[in-house]
Image (cartoon, rainbow, N blue to C red; front, side, top):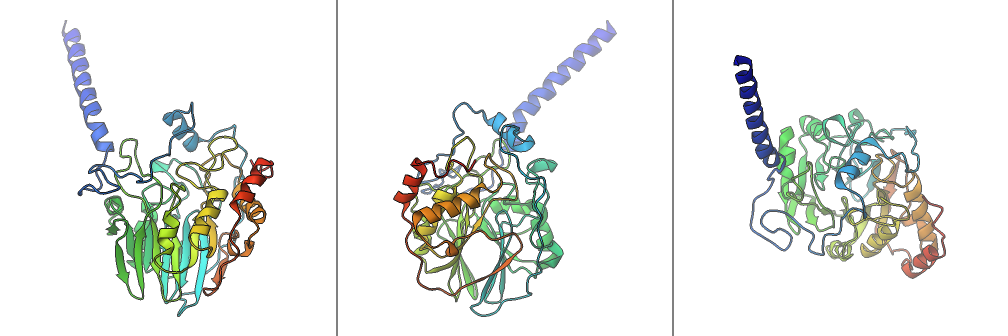
Length: 385
């Protein structure tokens, strides 16, 4: 009888603990990163895209299955290399005046050096892009070793996905350089978990950092670091106003209404832009997803920005989708040729190779997107899996 009472008591306590966990866990995971009044893109609780949210999974795909495939791999997708050879470079300590030097470090991490400033976007030096040691492993080492980075003055963090907001890297940067970290609303709360202060701005707000000024601008994406905290923090692109011409960082983005690139260009001539081209295909034949532009829509973004000198980013570092390793740059080149424009202004550059950005000048010919669509219908891009 005594054993039975102990067993029943143990069962009762197990039920109580389970109920407490089931009650508390969703609230724990659903972090509230930001509180403020409702706006055109914030309903008082969560942020949203004012041009409509369209980041739904393909028909027949469950979110749990999608996450499992991203974390553990999908054997049905084209193979990727285990490792890609990268020859890291050692940047200059500073680049003065109107000269601009850019180094793609990998994924969405770009070092921009100009006007005596060293600017770093979405820095990630971690080997995996995910929580607790899970997530995609990088196939390409960073194009600059962390210890070879010059002193960083400004860090731009576009949103809170693990492949863009890497707390371990931000902590290392803060402890070494004490840079100014600029992000969009709510992400400062996440960054603070690493003991790093950040300036969080809404779309349209500006932070002056002479000789530069950082404007947080609209793009089309979503945010989450857990299962239940979706869109509790804002996502953004950035325009950095500089004496020799503006720098535009797209962050992570889908095309949406396609108007936001022109909104960024209206702030002043863009000299250099970092535009994503990868992680766009989640089912066979897909040319874009709601939250990631592929090469075709990347050309539309480039056109909306005024066809500046642009660097294709967000490909070839972490496997996040179905397309083959080299599909994004190869498809971009094929589409630009089909569009009848100058490939020199928007061409892939190897990770770690520094690039001198030319001064502002006349843009190349407009891309003919009708011709790109005709090429697509004719099957010209079908070979790119």
